[in-house]
Length: 232
Image (cartoon, rainbow, N blue to C red; front, side, top):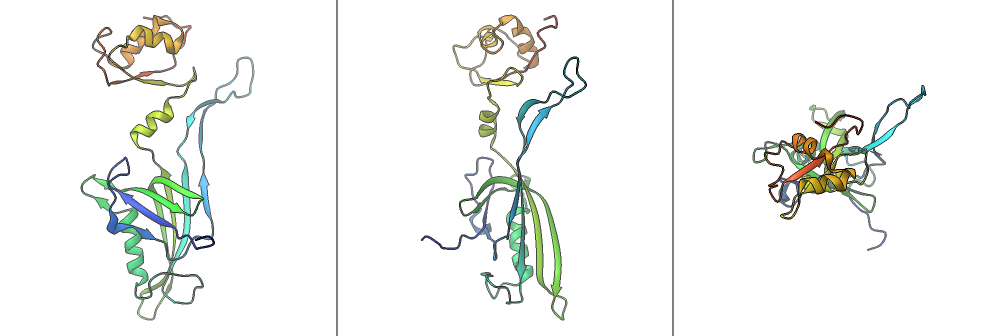
């Protein structure tokens, strides 16, 4: 329904491919953030250009994005637009949030993997990296009535997705290749460097036991080599 309110929702998963969801730990923010900050990072290698005092930044790869959310948990009943359950205390709402994003899961020996949804603007696969919890208001018995949460999440891609992102056609980046039954190391080396003479360096980099019998299914990396160096 158009014009309906989209709530910020965090889903948590016990696997890196985001398939096994913990359905009893979904967190819905009782009031949406007023704003969010997304930090998009690019990794650059800065080196001085030949004959110049300046820098010559070269693209190395896509950095790890970050998302920062600030929102409030309120138990006063006075905040307009607050759609949390009236019988849910601030302490319980905070515990539900931490259970979703930060609880140590014994099956994977770490906090869970997350996907954050909010309307059409946010669909962010991530893990939590930092949580600041500020208790700002209490009832006469000392129980919290309002908590401000500032949480930072670091983008996370599954190993398969990360492998695909790293497969970029550039001579200044490490290339990756999944070996098939018909592949030969010298020909793969030629495709990457336009020269097959680096195949021994590739074999050494990947700790290959044989340069003739490549095992289908393994991933081989082809890092940038200094072509002025002696191959040996």
